[in-house]
Length: 51
Image (tube, rainbow, N blue to C red; front, top):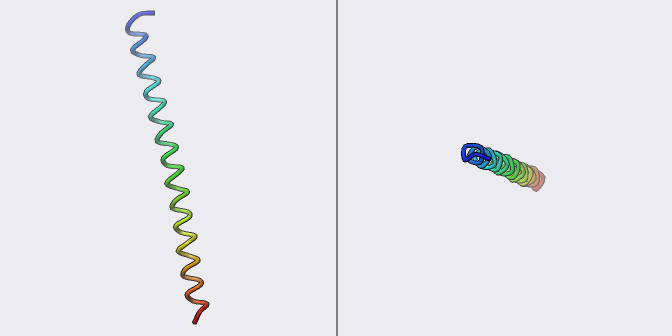
């Protein structure tokens, strides 16, 4: 294999790894935002019920 092919393969692997990390981060952020919204909604609804 030539040096150019090896360099290209390494570049492809790094790019795929970066995309995977980004997708995982977006998924995690979405889950955390969803939990925060659920908690906030519960607090608002329970505060209204106490009146």
